[in-house]
View 1 (spheres, helix red, strand yellow):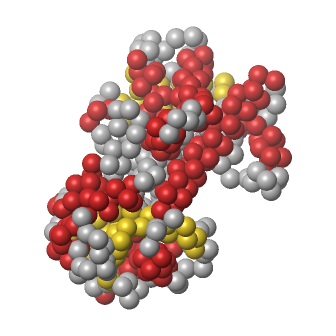
View 2: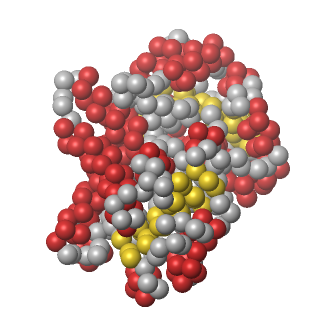
Length: 425
C-alpha cells in the first residue's frame, strides 16, 4: 500500500486515481475545479468513462480513494505524486507546459523528502529534467510514466495495459513507481526519462500515420473500384501490420493525436530535423475532412447552400462525450461555411456554446426530418440499428454519406438510398 496523490482529474488523472486505488493503494485526487471535485466526492464521474462511476462508490466507501481541492495538502504525505495535467497545443505547435510548470513550482516545498514525482501528462523530451528544476528539490526524483489510454475505455486500459513504461535516471525512483503496478500482468519497461517521453509521442504518431494511410488507400479504392473492406481484411492478416487501426473514416481527432503529432514535428524541428513524413500525415488528415464534406456536397447536387444536413454523431469517436478536435465538427463546420443548416444527433456529446449553429436533436430520426441528406460521422452502434426506410421517409432526398462505414450498404440501397461510404462504391 502506497500513499499517492494524483494532480488533475481529467480522463487521464481520474482513470489513474481510480486505477491505482483498485490496485490497493491509498489515493487522493486533487483538482482546483471545485465543481468537479464535489461531483466526484458524491460518487459520480463527470466524464463518460466506462466503469468509473461503478468503482467510485466502492472506493470512496473504503476510503482508499478521496478527492480534494487542496493540492498542497494532498501532496504533503504522498510518497508518489502523479502529474496528470493538460499540455495543450501552443500557437507554434509545441506543447504548452504552463500547467505543469505552475503546479511543479507550487508543490515543490510541500513534498516530503524522497518523494517521487511522476509525469503522466504527454510532454516533450526533456520535460522530466525541467520539472526537477521547477520543483527545486534535490531530494525529490522525477520520472516519466506515460499513459496509453483510450478515451471511453481508459480505466480498463489502465488495469489491463499492453505495457507499462517507467523512465528515469534514478533507478530507485523508477523501481518505486514500477512497483505500483506489481499486480498487473503486463511487461514493465524501464528506461531513461528521454526514451519514455519519446516513446509516447512515437506511439501516438505511428497510430495516426496508420489511420491516415488507410484513409488514403480508401480514397484510391473508390477511384479504382476496389472495396476497402476486402483490402484491409487482407492487410490485417499480415502479422507485420496487424488488424487494428485499419478502419477508414472521416479522419482522426480527439485530445491526443492532433496535438501530439504536431508537437513531435516541433520537437524534431527544434533539433534540426524536418519530419516531412509526419507533416504529410497531418496535412492528409486535414484534407480528409474536406473530402468527406465534398461527398455531402455531391449527393446534394453540387451545392449545400440553403440545404439542411442531418448529422449522426458529433464526438470524435464513439463511447466518449469529447468534442475536442472532432472530425465531425470539422466536417460540419465546412458544410456550415458553405451555407448549410446543420441538424445533429449525438446522445453523449457535451453541449458547447461555440457550436450554437448546430441544432441539437433528441433522436437520430428527428435529425433527419426535413433534411436534404444524412451524414454519419461518428461510429455509435445505435446508428446501424436505425430502419433505413424510416430515415428515407424523414428526409427530403434519400441520400446518405456514411463516413464511418457503419451502415448496411445493401439494406440502405434497397431502401432507395444514394449511398456514399469511405473506400467503397
